Length: 507
Image (tube, rainbow, N blue to C red; front, side, top):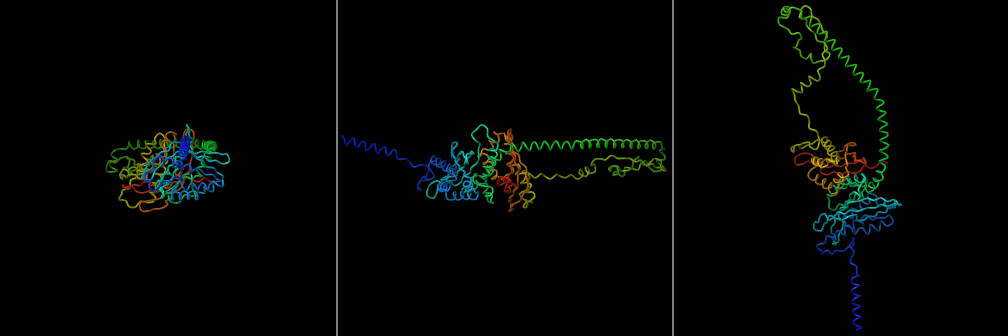
């Protein structure tokens, strides 16, 4: 009996130990054998959530150890790109020198967007908190991951794209929407390479390579934007006061000039009218005197009936202030009448245009037609076209954005348009503009540069000033736009790639 009790007790202890043995935690160190052909989707999602949160968890006092642990979350190429971005942007030094603490957590449900063999595309909503000396700043991101398998079989991040999104509140400040809209354009180019890692929080403007495929938002600029936009209200108030003062001063100076011009204009018209009446009266009196002369004298002196005014030289009637000789019907006595002929506005020019009609040149815009047989296109035409297309790409209105997008498609090649539209939809910018009632306008802010020219391909750089406005706020932002322009099958021009980068703040 005792032996049975002892065996039962030992069996219970063994069962409890077996139940208490923890399963392997799903983290960046989670092992998957190479021979495992299929990895379950829930496992991939859980792993991706952990890897994304770990990528945004850094602190000044332990950043070296954290980066060493973080390396297992990436493939070899993905990690090389990540560290290259961190070093070139100077963000490692900033975190250390400024004593920053960066923390993150999942802020919603993660979604598996697409699965291709051993490759998964995942979208995760994440909240990032930056802390320094008691000051806390929170940002909300949509993080797009491309996860693949390493040579050893484990999972690894091949690509990361982070775009700002609205915070989960009823009202979102306009500066968040501005950053969100801008980041979608930076996202277009990073989608070109599966193995390219760019995260908008870890690239500075100085660290951006020359190639367009390496452009993205700067982490330090992103942090600075929040503080800078907070001062816009005060600056706009000051500018409004100064503008009103300038306007009042201008009106005070121009009112006397306007009054003087009106009086001078009125006096000039009155003098012209009076002179015209006097000259007409003089002409009428001369005509009355001539009518009394015998018709026979007219026949004898001239041999045929002659009209009062010589119409053989019609040009004399088309020149203002020309003196015309009026022949009296008395052949022996001729009287000169000074006749002022009022100017006939542009009569000769209109007649010439009527005789030689010409078609005005077509305006250079996204609908400008170039035959496919045309081999050479002037650089000046390309630059003008690029300016129009870039400005149009940053003009949206909440009430008419769908029509504007339909019209904007003519500015892009098929591939360029698909990338632009996909970025706008994935980042939620179309919904943001509609729900935020945002009006977005732009204008050229400097000289356009033709960076390089290949056969049928042009790289153009130009500065834009973009304004975002709704009923509560107005934000003005400077952007540098890089375009790659090519030719469509029809021969017309089209944007193949577009990348926008923030203009560095002046110190």
